[in-house]
Amino acid sequence: MPLQIRAFDADHPSDLLDLEWHLPLEQWSDKSLVALPRGISRHVVRFARAGDEVVAIKEVSEWAAVREYGLLRDLDRLGIPGVDPIAVVTGRVAADGSPLEPALVTRHLNGSLPYRSMFETTMRPGTVNRLLDALAVLLVRLHLVGFAWGDCSLSNTLFRRDAGAYAAYLVDAETGQIQPELSAGQRDYDIELARVNIAGELMDLEAGGSLHPSVDPVTFAEAICSRYNDLWHELTRESVYPLDKRHYIDRRIRRLNDLGFDVAEMQIQRSPGGDTVTFLPKVVDAGHHQRQLLRLTGMDTEENQARSLLNDLDSWMTTQDDYAPGDPMGLGARPEVLAHRWVRQVFRPAVRMIPADLRRSMEPAQVYHELLEHRWYLSEAAGYDVGLDETVADYLSDVLPHIRDPNELVAEPAPEAE
Image (cartoon, rainbow, N blue to C red):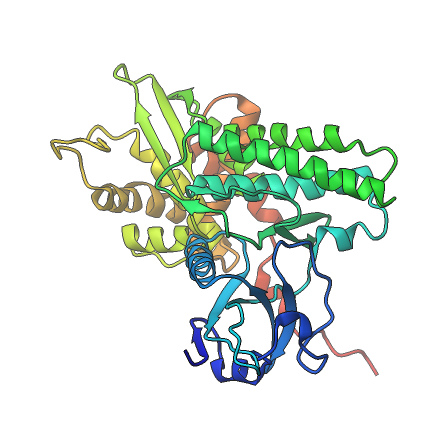
């Protein structure tokens, strides 16, 4: 069978033709390879230059290469941090006519490092903790979209420095599978594998003298279980709040945002007595808020503004008598109808309460976001949900006078006197 390169995500797939596919990957010359840190893998993996790009090449069976490519592509669509699949190469033949193993080609993740390279200089315990925090966040994200990893470990992860923290990226999906939803047993299995694998990897570093003396491999490996469980609980727990404590929902959303997760939508239900609301957050891909707000209201805003406005809209909907999500009889008002009612009855009146000449050139969405932020602070201090009228009055007297017009920041400085 002739050489076949099924390139799915390459800007210039012909660049892959120039690589030494007629040789086993271990025998490729320096003219093709790029010297980058490599992690431990059960397969032969090398970095090569294809045109202007650096790619990672892994020799693996055709079935495994096609399957892993598909999984990586699915995870990319779901917004999961991972390496980008580029191509599957089959039909490789050596000079003597003997067949060579197919290969999976992925794009090199710029700025990323395997964990062993990061431990070349002994990492302090606090840094190791941040590394494990990043891995716990990645595992939670995978489980939220129904991906059972089957081999969670430091070796199958790449890390990028992210200010004072780290971001983790999945690099090996060979053992994974995607399902509509994972059972508690499937998640526990992944967590237990992570604990065992990480303990072994840290013990290996300890034997090589690359682990800080105060880092106990078993204790640190067990800590990822508690990190994962705490994060999973915070993301998926159902909360019940008094109806007049709507700012509690804002507090929960802020806590999730601080953990690095966006609340893309919420399930909110009122109790039959109308005195409590049940709140369950959901997490989805970036940019969801802009698209959702545009679909519901026609307003085109920035992402953070859209998130803020949608959170308020969702909370306000629970106060409406014809709000009936999931009603099988279809008797409740459609979300679009409620959203336009919110625009007419809540959003526009609130914005109009701020005199046009005092808005400091802020767009209406930003004005309303500022009011929501101020209402949240007032409600936290008061211990009850402060209404918009009281919020606007306080905002006009105590906040707005101290906000400079952004146009003043770009004014040309006056010329100096001669």
